[in-house]
Image (cartoon, rainbow, N blue to C red; front, top):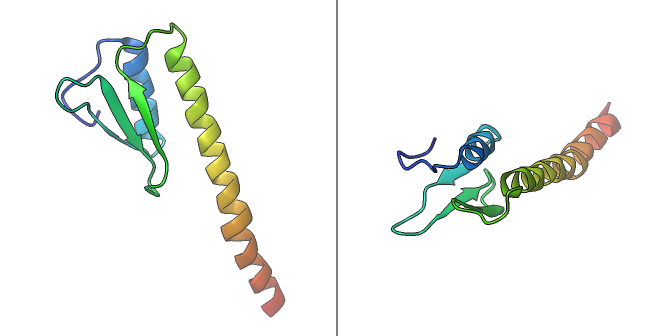
Length: 93
C-alpha cells in the first residue's frame, strides 16, 4: 500500500492493491477526506476511489472500469506507437 492509512473495507483494500499492481500510483486521502487518488504512469489518466462507498458492488465496478482503461491504453499503445515503428522498419528492410 502507498501509505499507512488503510481503508477498513476489505474490498476497497483489495481494489487499491490491485490498482497499484497494475502500475498506477495511489495516494491516500488528505486530511478528513475519504477519497483515494489513483494516477496512471503517463500522468494523464486519474481516477478516484472512495473509501466508504454506498454501493455494495462499488469495488467490483471500479475494478472493471480500471480494467477497461488498461485494455484501452494497451490498444492505443500498440496501434499508435508500435504499428508505425514496425511499418517504418518493414519499409527499410
